[in-house]
Image (cartoon, rainbow, N blue to C red):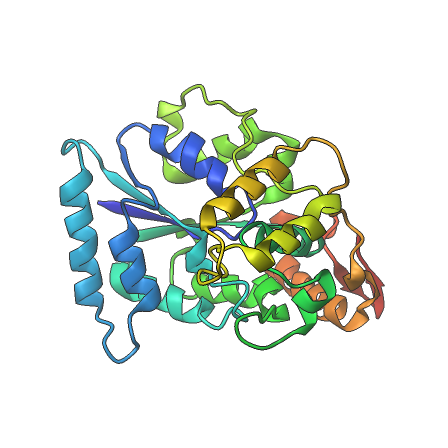
Length: 310
């Protein structure tokens, strides 16, 4: 049985794929985040001295046994952006996670990865951080650099991660897509994923226009941060006020349809060292996978000591 690992990354339409695409692919067993939780928890949180690939594959086989509706499924899809690493912990677990997955499945996998322009990715990650209970300002979000909030440039450097995976799987077993292509044409983007999965023949009509993970308008982020200082949340589970208050505030503010979103301009625009490192990383990836056309798609790229970014 073939295993598909969709590793995210964060804020690249993962929720849309998990809700609107993967569950509907015929002859494929999709293990959503709830179903795959025992396996994911073992991969992400087991002590290095205790981790065993044999135990991991045993948990995986048990999931198939528990959730396969028939023997017709020739493919299993696991999708969870947390496998890429925690963006708020300095991405220290990024290599460890992929090492464990590769060790568990060996050669029987295909890896799907979706990238995003790092400028927009940074803004979206900050929005998600506040939405789920974070209290740091935008400046603190990037500069704090201590547990529990370490936002590292390494997280945004895709080239070394992709080159590492490429050294462990065959070229046909790795597919790298761009979130910008999803925004430009969802159907073309998803059909390309179906081709990679070998499921072109089972294309079905999908709700391609649906939004599955709304952001909070930037004007309301300070208000959300204020609520987060008082209420329990995934980021702060031990505060006084019930987590229900946090969920209500989050639901109300994400439902607002006016106000600014965090656009391309952030305080990072003045951080030349950040973009210099990211630009160099993108250049390396562009050389490694020229078909991605990162420069043409507006990704930060460093050319002859001249920094260019959106």
